Length: 157
Image (tube, rainbow, N blue to C red):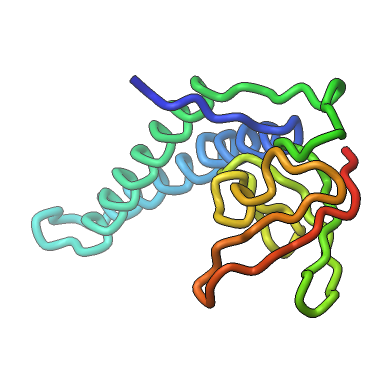
């Protein structure tokens, strides 16, 4: 049984676009490489042919995996997110209790996490520590350097 994965509309579209690119651009490109290598003669000693066939196998495996992920993908409805507590798709402003540094993150599904875009996974230690907290509460986040406390300053969507 496959695992259900939750996506935002943006994340699901990105996944579908990636699959479309693999099927319509990468697959034909590899087929052309195989045909070109085949035209060069003896396949038993043709490294280009072997490389293209291996690339084709890897691509087909990626396509199959992506199709499986999409088959089990569910869209998260963000229209009725409760902002009284931190949940998936919550934007949360937090303050480090020790040094007063403030940060803002959005909690997303594991597969959409992107630290550069300030999106952290609900499965990460940071996300797990924040889940279910209300404004004003202190979250104990387990880090490699020990437990760090963050105060939940604001929750929005």
